[in-house]
Length: 153
Image (cartoon, rainbow, N blue to C red; front, side, top):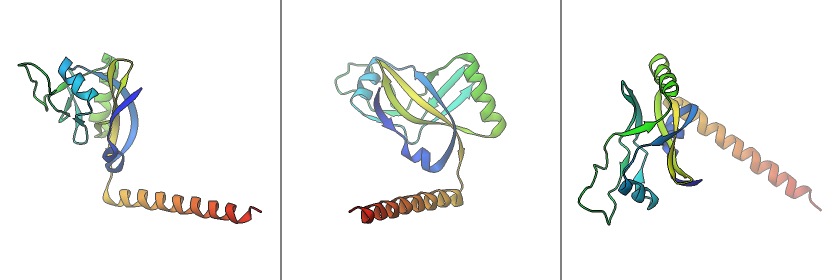
């Protein structure tokens, strides 16, 4: 598994409730551009429609050595899921007012996969609480390491 892009901003702005691995329908030049690492998933989100699940605002830069056809870098791309998974995700989004956010993009064998997260937005005070908890955990780990170093002969 080769990681291509990671959405660290999503873990800060959202609380991830569930993760789903999906495929994505791409053109050949888009796959080559992804292999080159010319991709941005920070502003992307997935949307349920009648005819399937689509990802919006996923920026894939045009491939350098392609021919005449150059797809739009921000076009909507179809996500490949089973029908029951699409129904489950769309029901969760509608019922609980959640958002589908891409968390990472990677190659699994030769296929491009996206890890989607079913997310709930964090409020400002939630973000502060998370940061405070992480800092206290880090400080506690530092103190225990310091204590262990002092006890060594």
